[in-house]
Length: 215
Image (cartoon, rainbow, N blue to C red; front, side, top):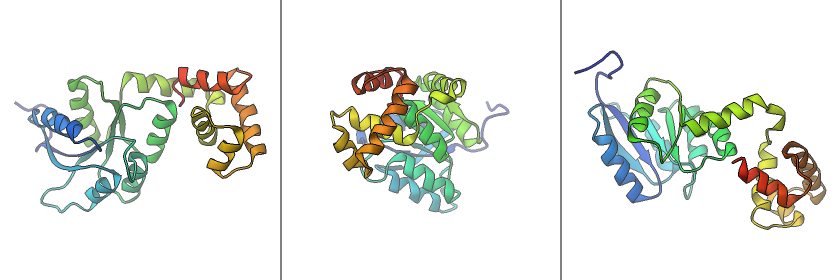
C-alpha cells in the first residue's frame, strides 16, 4: 500500500564507504525496505562523483556517503557532486564533531546521520533526501543549534585545524609547518581560540574542544 509520500518507484541509492563489511550491512538494511534499492557502491569519494554521470536507465537518486575515506573524502566528493548538479548526498558517519558537520553541510550535503541511528531513521532520511528535504540525527541538530545560539564562540576552519593538530601532541612550530603558516600566526589563532573556549592554555583548549565535540 502506498501513501502520499511513497515514491512511484524505489529510490535508487549509491553507498560510498571504504569498509566493505559496512557497505554490505547497509545494503542489506536498505534493500529490506520496499521503497529503496541499492544500485551502486563505491569505496571513496571519487566513485561517488561518478554517480553524477549515471545513465538514464539506472540513475542514482541519493548518495549515502561516509566522510573519512582514503582518496577523495566525503566532503570533497559532496562539494563536487553539488557543483556538477549530481544526486543529493546524505552523510552517514561516526564523526559527530561540529567542524565535520558544518563543513559537510557547507559542501551541500542534504542530511547528516550518525551510523548508530535506528534503521527507521535511516529509512526516513534516505526518502527525505530523495525529496530534497534535510534530515539530521538529534546530536547533529543539537550541535547546529549550539552554533546558531552562540555564533561568536564558533571556531573557524583554521582554528579547528590548529586544534586538531595540537591534539596529536604537535608543538606550535610543528603546527605551523603542517599548515604552512608562521609560528606567530599560530600564536595569534591560539589567543582567539582560548577566548572562544574560555581557557588559558593549549591542553585545556584541546580538552574543551573535544568535550564540546568541536574537533
